[in-house]
Image 1: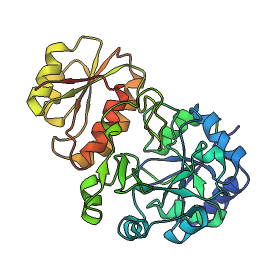
Image 2 (image 1 turned 90 degrees about the vertical axis):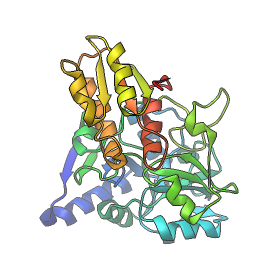
Image 3 (image 1 turned 120 degrees about the horizontal axis):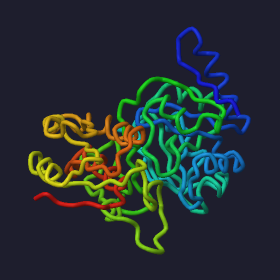
Image 4 (image 1 turned 90 degrees about the horizontal axis):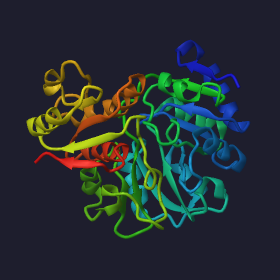
Length: 344
């Protein structure tokens, strides 16, 4: 299979949108840009096309997918028993990095829901992708466009590394602005429950829904027998080839802890302020301490970059669990398989 890369330019935009929509309509696989990460898209109503996502990613088939819609008016086409609160949240946060878990209609095939009665729905804040969905006339199932378990992709170049020759096309709209996946909020329970922290913070959600809670599973691995209600809950995710140890400890303490233990053939991810401590090692900056937006934009790319090295182990400083850093911390812990140590 020849994977075609479509670079967005104004003079070719109509051509690209038409071709991209046809790939979806014809049951193909298309990597699409969003504000969070690139997604690997297929017609969410076509079970065979959706199975192609699982095959291309090597994704376990009990890991449910999200569907993407271009605006809130599409909700009633694919969901039922929609609570008024869902429309209120959509008014505040759509288009944007919020996925809502709702009761799905029977038109959504089991291949998309992994047999659940619920479906995650979001409206991405990317007009190119929104227009592709409108032109295709169907919702697009689109998990992150990376091989299963690997760090997510925030550029089209990274997608091509993972999927060249495995999918039909990639729409290149530049680097993603958020850098971590969407926040997933379960609207089928009361109060609503955060299942995955992401590009929209729990603090911002609570400005609209003060009673929203965080599910305990975001701080740990699922227990044996627990069934994931949303993507990213069950399996080791976001991991480079080398094993990762996440170090909790503010600033200098965390850097000192790593410095005392790092070996010659190991690598480190740390805040910008402490890079100088690791001269001679493979080192990457997560951005300045206290800049969660930059941490989110960098985390996946720095994790992926170690796959181009020979390091045998990666140490990484891990941010706290407030605001957007909760999502970054969650991704780092999952990359580490929850191998977390404290420097405090």
